[in-house]
Image (spheres, one colour):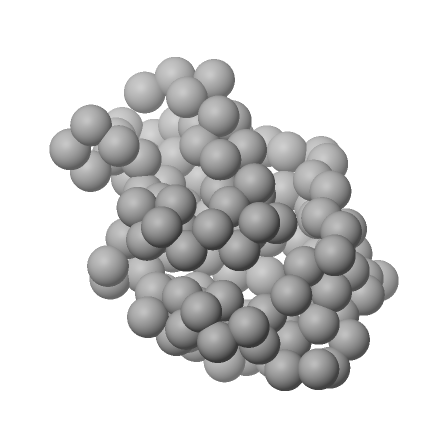
Length: 121
């Protein structure tokens, strides 16, 4: 696995999030995904996709910076800072968040198998 492949997968993921592209997210997120939210709640792929399907999750602005990619065998760990503006269930989201995502090779594709997010500012 190459760093460039992971960076391209990250770009694809962030683009899908910005556009609320459910079909792309279905492909990118592993069926057994677990993701820790800033409030401590652990969500699944189904929960995440339902947030987009229902229109609860709305992203107005998303910009990534300070990306670190570590390749470990057939997996990659990505740490990235994201400036985010939007809303979830009509509650505003506006801040800087630090994400960690674990990507794993699954067949020919990379899939997100785990992640976590904390709010920095």
